[in-house]
Image (cartoon, rainbow, N blue to C red; front, side):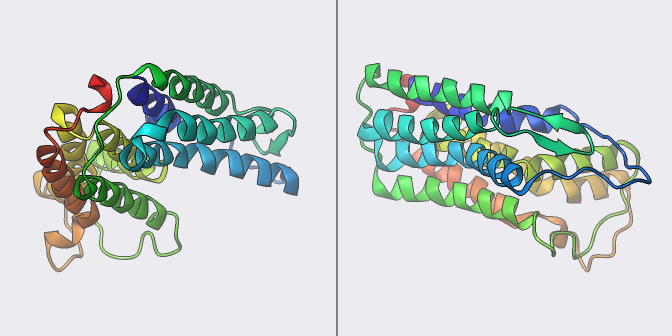
Length: 259
């Protein structure tokens, strides 16, 4: 149970950032304030560490289940340390001055505590190598897709002319992908390993995979693609299929939530 709680704590920042609108500050005619180089390094390191924490915990649970309390606590503690540094270094931007990433730090502290308490869990059975490799692939596909959206070629290609709520939900899904929400979903499936929860997490990856082509069809929006297949996020489709197969193949493995 505590293994699952650790990953739940680790994915909380991505989940909340995906559902709560970000701050909009606009811009002005005069020179905008910029953060110091030290602040950029500190806050970037804390942010990336928090984003990758669910992945690290899930992979530890898959490949090193018996060492999860020690390794998980060490990794979570590192994120906690980096979050703590943000309280010592102010980040000055157009939105004002920020000092301390409270959500990141608090969730890292909760994850660290859950990892330490995971020693009380009944010893999980060793995950078969094929199942661990399958869930690792699922996480890798989701992570690669998320990183792709940060690149210069993220928005090259064809798009449907969505409007109204169809466009609004497309933008929300796009934001959630860049914030790592679906990486978090993959990590939850991996730590559960098998059962309905793991299967549901894998199936949920079809939402970002199929929303755009379904929205184009249901709204009747025009598009400049040669076929609707170009609108499908195929990495998520592959991840969903592999995840469902892995969950079914691991029925004899005790999931984290039932340990």
